[in-house]
Amino acid sequence: MVGKIVCISLIATFVLLSGCQPPASGDAAGMRYPILYMQLQKTDLPTQLPIPVENIKPRQIQDTWGAARSEGRKHEGLDIFAKRGTAVQSTTQGIVLQVGTNHLGGKVVWIMGPDLSRHYYAHLEDYAGQIQAGDWVEAGEVIGYVGNSGNAKNTLPHLHYGIYMQGQGAINPYPYLVPSS
Image 1: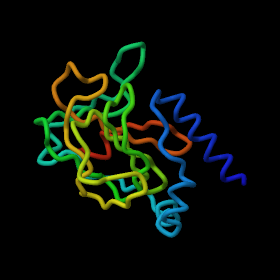
Image 2: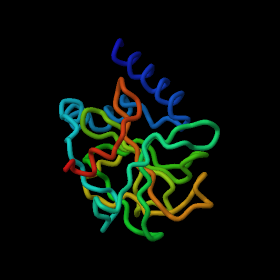
Image 3: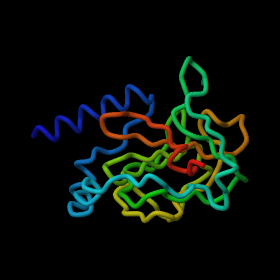
């Protein structure tokens, strides 16, 4: 019961901090894949993740973490620009928590990955195939396609990629995608 209260508290804090709709609770994911959920819970998030946009190289990514955004917000992720329709791939193995829309991100996919991290893929043009909440995905699996949905409708197509860690909220994804020199 304590774990459930902590999970609900973390999700509520996440929603308040991010301004995004919450993904399904970890408990729901745990019920569909109890062994895989436990495996994710016990696995550390790797220090290096693959770039989630097909054919994009580290030198093409700029660290946009913390940049000013509308309504006094700060950018809590990275914008990775690419041609509309370019494949977006999961950076980790995990459980799809949500496939849907929200005001800021437009078409989005949330995935729970190692250490119960949550990975946010936003401004998608479309989703891959029949992807749906509860699916298990592997790192590198196509989950959607670059677009400019949501509040990015007046920008060039790009993927907004965010990482949210339990107890920390949003963290800068840049060091996970671009190796330090």
